Image (cartoon, rainbow, N blue to C red; front, side):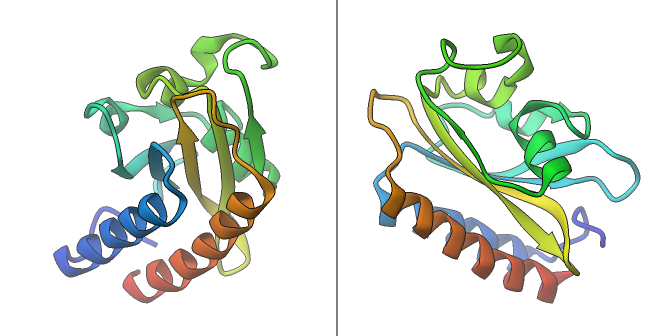
Length: 152
């Protein structure tokens, strides 16, 4: 699995998928993180609704940050009222800080049955992410799994 080598057409498909989730849910941010193929680090590769380009420079260790925790556990993660309701320090959640997110919901993206990526949606306002939106994110993650599997 080599994510860095995805074709330009593939990159466009992934960007479009992130934009579609952003418009479907009317959320503020959608991001896709993938675990590096040459180590345990996790990096944010795509974003829609981003307020800056900082996400491109964020790398977290396996098991750290939202992306690393979702990949290591293989389970969705929901954050609300960031940074009040978190375990640990706010600095351990760089994507939340970089994008000024108050609420986030992240789900794993699997490759050959193993979690290797994360789809995250977030809101900068006081708007929580409800069950219906969470279900939509899970469905979008399954569609992204199919797209990414065909590109790799």
